[in-house]
Amino acid sequence: MGDPLHRVRTPHFDAVFMLGAEDDEATVDNVDVIVTLRNGTRYSATFLTLGAIRRWMEGEREEYERIQFQCPDLVITRDAGVPAMMRVLEMAHERDDLRFLLTRLEPSVLDDDDEDEDEGEGDEDG
Image 1 (cartoon, rainbow, N blue to C red):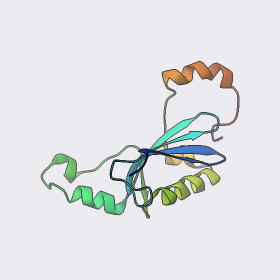
Image 2 (tube, rainbow, N blue to C red):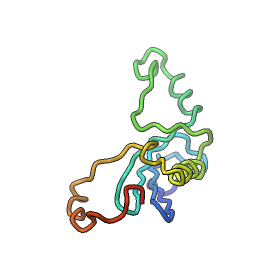
Image 3 (cartoon, rainbow, N blue to C red):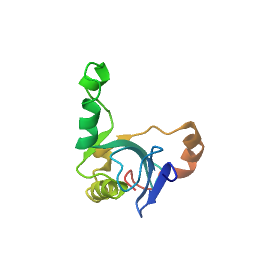
Image 4 (spheres, helix red, strand yellow):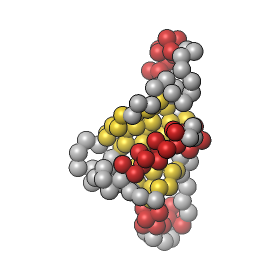
């Protein structure tokens, strides 16, 4: 509906939601997000609502992918939409829980160039 990479900035982190072609940021119920703390630490998550999981499971009932469900960085939210998901992220940050809620990403090759400059700066949770 708009830009497939929807960025939300907060004082503590940036979140980039990867919307699908038909997704609306106000109602999306299945979306991947990359969270980058101010110190450069990156995390990933797949946000799903129970409704999105139910629709997935009710698909072709004989397909292996439909009789089980797994997602290593899954975060289930009560409400759909980027604003609801941002509320979860912000509350997790306030509680110092982002590192437990999300999956930490290893630095990319591009990040290695900046590592020497950033070493020793900031704490893990920004």
